[in-house]
Amino acid sequence: MDNVARSGPDPQVVKQAISWALRLRNNRANVRLRAQCEHWRAAHHDHELAWQRVQALQQELSSQLTAIPGAHRALESSAQGLGRRQALKLLSGVVLLGSAAWISRDLAGWQRWTSDLATATGERRSIQLPDGTRLQLNTDSAVDLDFNPQQRLITLLRGEILVTCGAAASTPLLVKTRHGLLEGIDGRFAVRQDSECTRLSVVSGNVAIHSPHQADGLSTQVHAGQNYLVSPTQATLVPPLDMDISAWADGLIVTRAMRLADFLAEVGRYRHGYLGCSADVADLRLSGVFRLEDTDKLLAILPQTLPVQVRYRTRWWVSLERSV
Image (cartoon, rainbow, N blue to C red; front, top):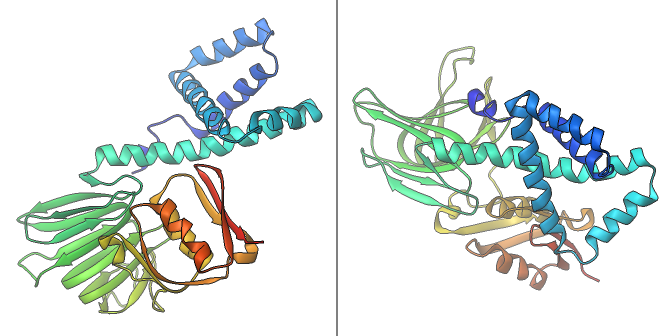
């Protein structure tokens, strides 16, 4: 996927485009500065691409800030009350925050277009593969498939999948992530790929973890009820999770004394924008069965069982705080 990551403008070019946008914002009447910006845009295709995307991002942020009464006035007043350099830092902080989200979203969108199967944020998908294996994709996930007489290979590009496979066939069923190679022998198992490791959770049956970096060259056998974290160098058995690993396939989150902060991190995978909580409620524990089809309704019921209140700063920025 390295080639995908390089398909857009370099992040440094994006920062340059942001810098030009901010300088022009504060020097609208400077004809010379505008000409210099146009010369920079014309110097390379990536410059113009970054410029157009930063302009689009500014428009998107502006529309989102409109949802907050007085947000634009507060931002402008803050900028005017500071020195020029400090004001630029304030405004660039807002734009850079959005740019980071844009870069991440752009890559995810590219993977959805180029992968064999993919889901958007909040979407789940189920498909039966040619050999009878049932493959389910969780929110914001993407896979490539390579099924032929020589191999049965599922490559997890991002996100999480649930695999239900039958008894061993003439060719093994393999799941490849950036951290290791898994072999489904018979049963049901979930695979979630994060940035630093892959989490394997076996619901039923057995799964083998193949790692060329293990000193003895042997595979790790994982049985029903076990959870492993797989890195490029090792596979580590971890304690049972505080949530049902396969409930998402039925549109549910089922928790057992789960920390509120961890619960919100899970729910946040199914919606756009920021979802979090203040530090003084992060360690509150939550048990129950919650439906995923409407995360706003899900959040609305939390104050019924926990001493919290839900605050919507915008549609995309939601936080839970201790109720007063």
